[in-house]
Length: 496
Ligand code: GLU
Image 1 (cartoon, rainbow, N blue to C red):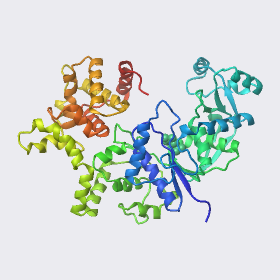
Image 2 (image 1 turned 135 degrees about the vertical axis):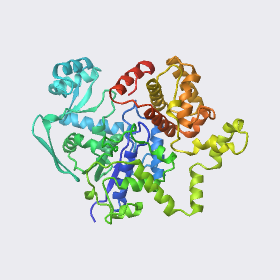
Image 3 (image 1 turned 60 degrees about the vertical axis):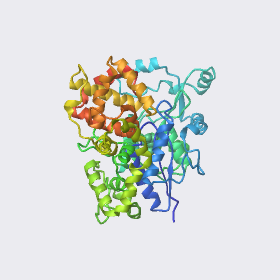
Image 4 (image 1 turned 30 degrees about the horizontal axis):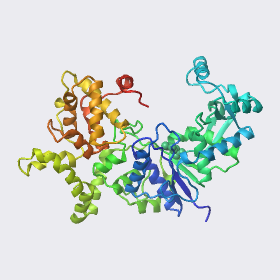
């Protein structure tokens, strides 16, 4: 047997756990486990401004829910730790230093003003003009010790072609002239993705880099770094991107992308995995329904097709239905429903909210239906705010989705503060502002107290229902969306 297979996923903890991460995790996991290999989870949190612990926890939790357990990772450690990039800064610095010493990298002292001027002169999409590349090492050392701020850039050849192999695409060629002298250490001392990913994949003994195709363009920089360090390349395999039905890149405006949403909406982890397994791949016998065990016994990466797999929620629902009908006894299904939402804990949280509104016990049914549903039917005509046109209501709902995305916690108290603040900013009465939220979230104009109810529904389900309401009002997209983003940043502060 050859060398042991070691693969990894390397999510950045900057938002909801994404189905794209689950997709990559599945193929990495199945490939490694089908070959007695190891599956590693590494957290790429070098973007300090956008990374959060909450997001990291949510990613780990959603992968556990899917049953894709890693062999080494930030929570269990392993022989090549730490597995969180923010804890490996000294390692990156040391490697950047060695590139500096060898003349493969250089300090760049260019100020923002100079770079802005350069861009105005050359056009916005041009790379760095390599102004600092010729500063003599002694001079560079002197300026650095004098405390002048700098970044470190890697040297990219001015001409020639970079040639590398992708397992699914064969040979890929890119002119070096099109590649920039990439920053590898930022002015805050943190590495960029490019340096960190190469150093970590090498030190963690990764044999196959299986990830999304959006990274292909970065590979030449990585190939050069491997060469500078004198390391062997891993095998690169770039998976196709998941697509919306209209073939655009999977986006939350057109499709739910958060794994938590699917969990909340009553999808089964085994069905979701099975469906993701059908994205660009098929069992040799063509059967649609298969287990993870069957997938890993049959997966050959070379068989993945690049046609741009469409993630179609209706098909996923159909497959999920097959699991529910075919794989559960009524007793087992009862247990599943209980662990999903029909349990004492959840019902116990809902009771105090509905008790003041019950005249008969049977009122329970219609008053609480929205807590146990995915989509709730509503009349778009009822999505109203006093004095606002439907399009403006859609825009306000969109603002709220962005506010909720930026919001750390999702407690009733935090929501109360968020909406009060929104009402002040938008110069609306709180009551008027909240009216369409009742309709979008419950299908009714009167419901249980809004913020407590939202807390129980959870952030992903709330945002999903709000997006559906926005669509029902005609949606915000294209130019309108750009304009709205600007308006939002003026009203509420910057959105990244
Ligand atoms: N941190 C990158 C991401 O979030 C990982 C890319 C890679 O796998 O190399 O997608």
